[in-house]
Image (cartoon, rainbow, N blue to C red; front, side):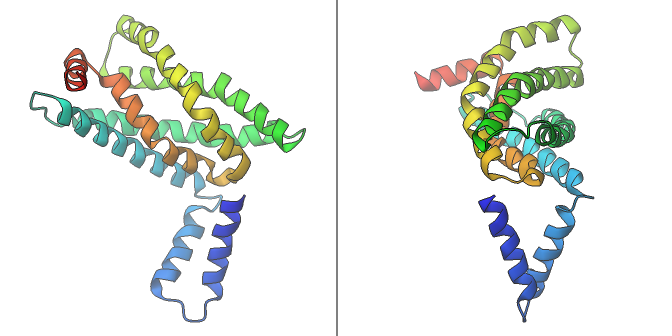
Length: 215
């Protein structure tokens, strides 16, 4: 709530400023328009698409840097990541709305603990499987290959998830207002999306490149 109250205070201050510049006016207008209840879902979705695409762009350049071979940029891969982000954002949007409505009883610490537990036991496994399933479908993989990949990679990704996301989500549930949560998670997950991109698209050649550099 501290971040939210400070942001609202800044907006109100800009509104009262007697000699507002066009920059101030534009900031207030864009903020109020983008984060209004009417357009919040669209804002969350747009930012998620942008950040997922950017994360894959970073990961592909990391792979190119460590690779001994000249690699062309894979635009389809980035497009697939953006589609994933575009579908994941609305699900996250309504997930946090439901979580706020369903988990209301108890102290603030009890409420946060319940939300963290629900997020790790329900949301995280769902999105881990959803990620591999969505990209695999977009790639045109066979059902058997998709099943094998999920069995091989999903558990490891989920274990890393359990180490990374609880502290991130604790901040989310303690401090971030509900209408800014998907955006906070989208920004916080930029590094996570880089990791997901690596986990999904890594191949034996990339693995050898990383090992050779590390050795």
